[in-house]
Length: 446
Length: 48
Image (cartoon, rainbow over all chains, first blue to last red; front, top):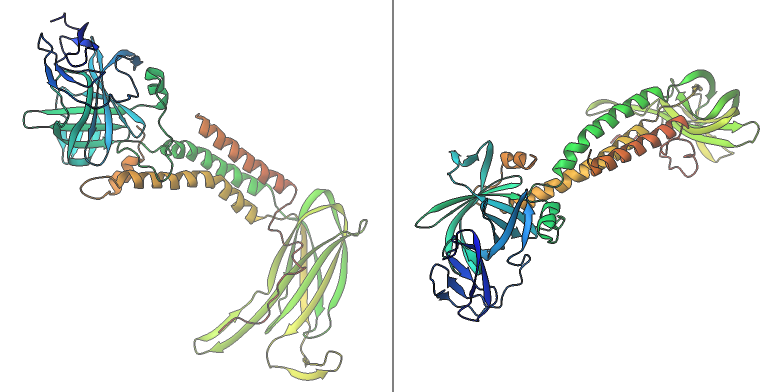
């Protein structure tokens, strides 16, 4: 047998192909990379253990490929494909004469680096603890079966070999227990980033998760990092928004005007002014107050008319008040006061033109036929006073809420995607259904 | 700061900039002005 850790070549007794044994001295079983025949590497005559007629698998990383991962140069010496009856995954055996063996596990385009533990983890209830990392149960009692194999291994592996497997997870990590009748082995695997695996072995980067895809059990939500990173920015933006809300929109230089309108009487039109707007563009606030309206309403149309250009900026208020008594007692509805906000009036001198028409509702009062309109109208009702307070400036709360919504939409979208991701991930969990702890664990960073 | 955080910060600055521009111009898409024409007016109590 060759010196330990060196490369040795031998001919496949089945197809005659030259096979490089890269971990000579450690390797027990060797699969021909050309015909798939399994060879006993400990036998000087390279005895055939099993012959396979399967076509050599097209591997994402060809055997013999070297790549540097986490500062160590690894050589891919073996490959096996396993399944638990539900999913199929590939495991590449990496070897470095000084660092030993590692596993490179590929599933759904995601890659994890597996390291075998030399001691069993600590158990804490259903959880397992390795160092300071806590792993919670995810898969339990599955049977992992070797489907295909190529390359060399440190044990006598063959297709059909089965182990009982249980997996424990935390974001970015999976702790796997594999056991058969003879031994137990623990492996901790860490999810690799697309950049890492591509730099090491030039494979395609992992696919970006989209709704409908099934994430790996230990795949961290790609949205957690964004939510955590965006939260302080959203909070700061909210504070800035509050400051802007307090700085802008104060009303100033109020002017008051009043007129009166008789219920069911003619429309009263009155012009007030001048109202001078000295600066750029600004909003105007108009409070229309009708303190004496009762069982009726007042239509109030206002127009700011620019004296120079005759441009008109209109708004409308409906002040109304109704009350009565029924089986539930006294009721009332309507508002005697309305606040109007007119946006972006250019600088200039304006007249305020007000049209007010008061109406009476119901059967109280004296009714008389009005020949001009051919309708019955109430008579003898007191005129309703319409008070107007006009001020420069206006605070639009709707602008604030709209801006806040726009600030929150991206984080909320990330939160919805995170929930969808975690739903898809936790749906695979064996045993008890996902609880609050599982969801909280999903919010942790790797 | 990650690229996504940087882009989100840009988005927030854009929103705040728009808010500031609207506030300084006294503008709001929800202002009352201009609603008179075609506005549906319903009169009378709705109490049942």
